[in-house]
Amino acid sequence: MLSKDIGIDLGTANVLIYIKGQGIVLNEPSIVAIDTETKKVIAVGKEANDMLGRTPGKVKAIKPMKDGVIADFEITEIMLNTFIKKVKGKSFLTRPRILICCPSNITPVEKNAIKEAAERTGARRVFIEEEPKVAAIGAGMDISKPEANMVIDIGGGTTDIAVLSLNDIVTSTSVRIAGNVFDQDIIKYIRDKYKLLIGDRTAEDIKINFASCYKADKKQTMEVKGRNLITGLPHMITITQEETEEALNESVRKIVKAATNVLEQTPPELSADIVNKGIVLTGGGAMLKGLTDLLTKELDVPVLIAESPLTCVVEGTGVLLEKPSELEEE
Image (cartoon, rainbow, N blue to C red; front, side):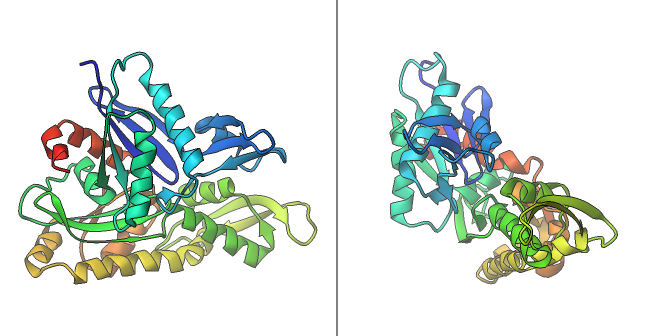
């Protein structure tokens, strides 16, 4: 085959690319470092991420995606082009077809911007699918039958919640509370309580390796380094896991509320299926300690984490690319 089909998970935190027949070929942070004086791109992806919060004045690390949509079109276009060139190599003799995902409930203008960014990479044709549907497929759910499958996809910028049946979304919602907001919650809590300023990367490290949002252990502690806001000097404090639960409580409750609303709008026959099968969590946010237990308790339905939550969306694009007939109908 001279042309290859490409699936893209254009996320707020990471971009993942799937090539038909090869699998996942790229997984890099959605970050671009530019020189603010010359406007030249210095680094993209992992390389730019290493510079985050550590750049000299004239170099700025930009995250062009915000809340699952494009915040800076020009930089997003540069980023996508760089990534696609990286994975294309010489194997593409003709222009590929691209399947790209977007959050559910975004505006037509936001959707169009995502489509246009993909078109500008030299695609022959661009298909757009909603993230929760693709995440469900990537998590191994069979959404073609007349029975309910419920997925909660917690990414970097948005949490997409949907009930699916017969290859389509029955009811869904999208809230702009996800991994990035969790990071900000931790930063704010530590700043307010300890007058210590920490960077995004430190907050992310706390979230991934230590934080818990349910039944946290007050005996478990972690040392956190940052800048004292009063003295302006480097400083270290010790926080407990219980404090992280306090920091994340409000945001996590909003996700629980959004999931409750979706369940309330679900037809009763499908509700019965959800009770039997449970809800599947996907996305990086699914790995937050305590989240499955909290959701199980609050929603009164079993909640499970997908086998590989971080790659569900892009793996779902891979499954859909193997069935071009379903895409043609878009």
